Image (cartoon, rainbow over all chains, first blue to last red; front, side):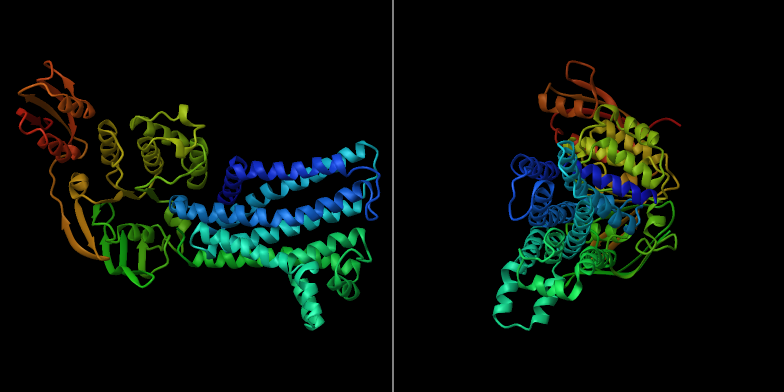
Length: 275
Length: 284
């Protein structure tokens, strides 16, 4: 347990010192400030007002930025450390591999998740202080969705870091994974697949397997229960799952995918050459 | 006791270790020598449980791969190339102390003997230290723990003569610790060890004992005379901590016993200049 907590603390300390963390915090802090300045008004845009509008925009921006940020920074630092010889020394110390791997993942999770949620909570607190109604239920679900999405992409990032033997390969692989997932969003390739007469079940399966699509649909579902703003696959999903069922899927599936990919990464890490 | 049987490691079809078998008794001091690519680093990484391999590696009948935390608690390691750790020195010491259960005060004591004061550098990133400081710090961490096996990859490569002298004294104070010291050059490590193993192509090319009657902690008193004053020679003598006893013509100092081959190697560069050398063993 000592080794695990030490690994958690080590990763938190290392990450918060890194330049990427400063940039990352500035990006999410900046988004919130921007949304507060331009968005937290009673103006009605596409049916959303006040904090609901801020939440919708913030969540959509987080979906675009968070995964690629997590993937690139994780694989850069983990694969980069191994390449530079950091693992050779640090893993010559009596740290159980499980404590090292999961400790670093949990530390990284805290570092990635906290700024995103703090920025969001800061905006909500400001809005509440300004007398704007707070959509508490939406806020709780959004934070839970962000948590699940963060864990999912951290797991994928750790798996890529284990598989790739150099930071260049790891970064390229991470970017390609992100690009593929972005391409299979509702409004991009899924629509094309439907038009090119792919069986609807297959399109639905792709939409349900893509954690980005799952996150996007669930986050929009909170504000737009008829999903009028989303594409074709979302309608089918809504018909099959219902709102509650889909929210549960959106919370459980990305977290399970993250755990599975991280677990596979750990098995490979333990069996292979460490440095 | 280290027992290695049929250890084989293959990287992309290249056999870096080829059915290597070795036994190293507890308390032995072994120099592991060989040219680049001979398999020294790979062997060390197998001993540290960092590489998957064929064959078996056992340290005190336990596998460093399967029981890494238990085995590595008793292993100190000093790498040849200090890792580019961005964390501050204080954090590295804290992390190491936490995972090894060591007393951080002992790191400080060892570092002090090597000529490194930790207090002013606690907040400095490890990677920003000079090569010598990094080496001293890593040695302090390895020697500041109760370990049964020390694995050191060219440990004295970046050390100045006083720090080398302190390192030899520290090693001499650990008579029951098994030591595996790697080097490209035998003369660098021969006085520290009682056995030499040379690797070539992943196999043992030579396995011999070293007879050295001199106490490893011994310090030899030395007096030198030269025919004329020479700046390069004076600089070399200052590096060894010698003092000028007669306007650059006579020099006096002390040479650590295990470093005498290196010292004589330095003198050989000025053989045309030297008129007298007196190197005296300590009287018992």
